[in-house]
Structures are given as structure tokens and as C-alpha cells.
Image (cartoon, rainbow, N blue to C red):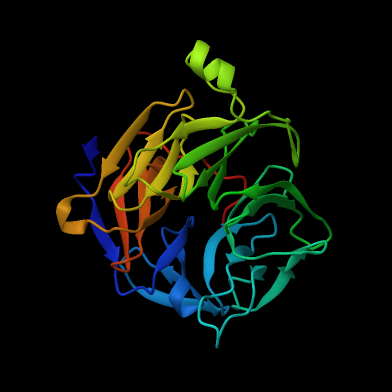
Length: 301
């Protein structure tokens, strides 16, 4: 365990911030889930509304066209719920439209987080009891399910070489990994290998990266330049760093900034050494120096 000793508040008063996206000008985009909007936090802590998209925007990423793509869980207020969907937001104008609400005859229940690959398409999670992992094109022309009946999938990310897909499962406190054989194609895995578990002490190398103890429910994630998966950790307030070989370090927020819903992290700033962390219960965006550079994403703005 370690402490993010230099952590400080960039902005507060946000309505359950999530989905941070660091921009080249030093500002950070966040979604405000409880307010149904996308906001831009300036380096000076100023907050500007970019778009009011409704529902419950949950995760976000810049696409190949420079637009912001948003996983919207639809919202929890029945009077305002719009249904799960993927949205596209023009950052310059705030104009937005809906790209997907379903995959074939399977409606999207609560899209949560997404990551673009170098081909310009994206993987995303649908966060529900029997959730799914999907692969889609940003123009609305193609979407397919890669895995279904996944328990509460949340954050999702790619290894530095783009060859491994990671996702966190909140309720079971696990990070899964799958080898990518082609864009949008995952190597089949038998899942848990009980014989290997009991006789060699291992598990299927293409399935489980780590299982966490109680009090470490996992939310959204980013990957750093070493390939470590960095996951927002609920209850025990901090960022869980999990190396590709499964070693785990929890980087806690200092007690004065503790938050039971540390939901996400992204990397920005000089040499991508600044971790921007969303603390959703206290409505804060926090920053801290990470001990190595983050991973540069496929697309930025």
C-alpha cells in the first residue's frame, strides 16, 4: 500500500463525476452522471458545461473524428431515464446524437465505459447483472457482442501493444483479460482452469488477471505506459495498480481527500505523469503525480 501524498483538488461541486478525459490544453473533460451532462474542468479549476446529454453519462473517450463518445447508462430517475445508449458529442458546439441503443435485438442496459483501438473502433462495457462486452464502429454502422452474461463489467482498457483487452467486474472484484486476435476478435478462453488452479497454483492466462479482497470493489480504469491496469477502487479509497503479472498495489488517497467512490482515473499533463481521479461521492476531480507515465490513448483532442 502507498499514499498519493501530493494529491490535491482541481475542482469540486461536481454531480457524481466520472469518465475523465485529459485534453491537450491542460483541461479535463468529465461526465456528471447525476446532472446528465459533460463538463470541462480548466487547469484553474473553472467548470464549463459542454453538453447536456440527459440520462446518466458514465464513461467517455475521444474518437478518431475528434468528437467525444459517451457511454450513457440511461439514468436512474424513472421520470428522466432515457435508456442505455452510446452518444456522440461535438466538443465545439455541444451538439450530440445517439449512435447505438441496442446490439441487434439486445438492448443496451447501462453502457459504462469505452476505449478506442488504433483502427478507430471501440470496445465498451454494458454494466448490468448479466452484462456484456461489445465492439462497435463510431459511425453507427457496426456493433457486435464479444461476451455476454458478464457480471457487472465496468472499466475497460487496452495494453500498450493493443494485444490484450482488460475489463473490471465491480461486484465480483475481478479484472479480466482477453487476448485480441484481430480488431474486435477475442481469443476463446475456457475461463477458470480448476486443475491449473489446484495443481500448479495458476489460472488461465487469458482469463483472470486478479481477484480482489472485500472492500475493493472495482470501477473504471486506465492503463499506464508499463501496461499496469489502474482501477478506481471503491470503499477502500484509492487507485489499484495491477501489473500484467497480477501484482497489486493500492495507492490510497490521503485521509483528508478520502472518498468511498473513487470511480475513474486518466493520465495527462507533462509526459502523462499526472493522474486525474474522479471522486464521485464528494464531487471532486483530484490530481496526483503518478510514478510513471500514463499510456497515450489512440486518439486525443
